[in-house]
Image (cartoon, rainbow, N blue to C red):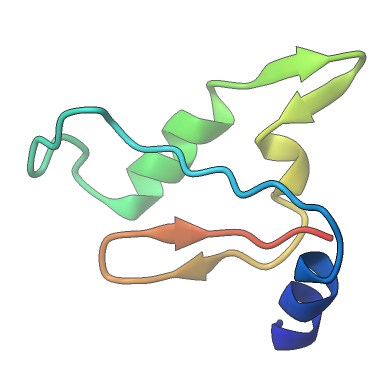
Length: 71
């Protein structure tokens, strides 16, 4: 994972954070439910779905966050 991040940051890259504008604790019951919401909120451009196109790579999970790093 660290090598992938190092490679990405050696060139131009985008960092995309998806979060609500106003924080409401326990708005979503679990990270699993959050992942399901993300999978159902796909936007496509020229046949490329976002963000679900990146679900074929490992998902890192914290206590209250989900992270995907894509090269």
